[in-house]
Length: 365
Ligand code: SF4
Ligand code: F3S
Image (cartoon, rainbow, N blue to C red; front, side, top):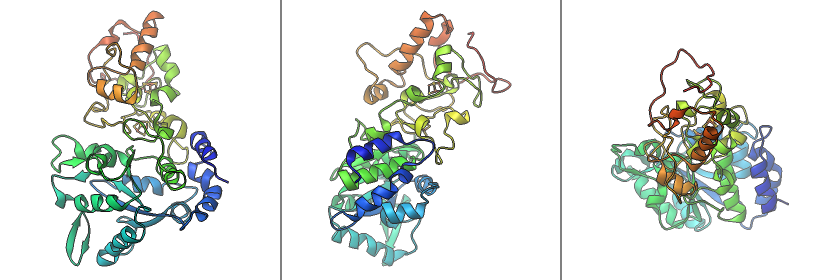
C-alpha cells in the first residue's frame, strides 16, 4: 500500500538511478485504481508558454510519457498533445467541468496575458476564439485544485519580463477561487510535476512554502546541496562558465534559489546545470528572471543581510537586489576568518571579466 509516509520518502529519496515516476509506478497504479470514482481527470491548459514543461515531462525515459499519462495521470486535454480540435476538443473541457466538478485537477503551463487576451487562444468554439484569460479562471472555479507548472505559470517568468507587453501574470495572481500550487522551474522537473499531482490525487494539498511551492522539492537552497560547495569553502572559483570550481563569480544564483536539482538531476539523472558547468540561473525562484536572477552571468552582490533577516525563501527574495543570502554572507565571513578569500569580496555586482578559458582559478583577488 502506498501510504503518504512511503510516498514522501520516495519523493525525497529519488536518486540518479531512478525517477520518481519509476519508483512510484507499481504502487501508484494500484492506489489510483482504488480511488472512489477512479482517477480524477487532469486538464492541461497553455498560457504564455514555450511548452517546455510538457517537453520536460515527455523526457521521462522510464516510465515513458505514455505510461505516465495512462497509469498516473488521466490527462483529458492538452493543446500540445491531443488529437481533437475545435468543438470536439472544447467539448472535453465542458464535459470535465460539469461531470467532474470539484474533482479534476487543472494544470496551467504559462502565465495569463491579462493585458493582451488575444495573445493566447486555446481553441475555438463554433469558430469563436477561446482566450486563456477567460478559460483558466472559468475552469479553476470548478477544479479541485490548480497546479501552475513552470516559472511562467507560477510567477510570470520570462513572459513577464519588462516591459511585459502582454500584461502577463502568474496564475496565483489571477485565480483566487481555488488553491494554486506553484511548481516553478524553466522547465519544471518531471518529478516535481508528477509528485505534486500524485500528492494532490492521493493525499490532498501538499505542504507549501510562502510562494506556494511544495516543500517536498523546494525546501532547500541549491547552494546547500551543491557538490561544488567544497570549492566555495576553499575559495576556488571558476573564471568562466564551464570551468571547475564554484560558479559564484560567473553568476551562480544557487545561493538564492530553492530547489533540489543537485540531488535529483535532470533527464533521469543524466546531468544538471551546475554539473554541466553552467551557473544556476535561478529558474525556480519567484524573482526569475527580472527581479534578481538576471543578468544570468553577473555575480551576486556580496552584501550581508540586515540584522534580523533570516534566509527563508521570503526574506531572501525581499533582500535580493540589495543583498545576497545570509548563507553566502555567513560562509564568506568564515572564509575571511580563515583568510581564504580575497579582500574585495564585497565588491559591487558586476559581470565576470573575460578570460581565455574555463580554467580553475584559486581566488587570489
Ligand atoms: Fe554551487 Fe553555485 Fe553555491 Fe558555488 S555558488 S557552491 S556553484 S550553488
Ligand atoms: Fe533551475 Fe538552478 Fe535548478 S537554474 S534547474 S534551479 S540548478
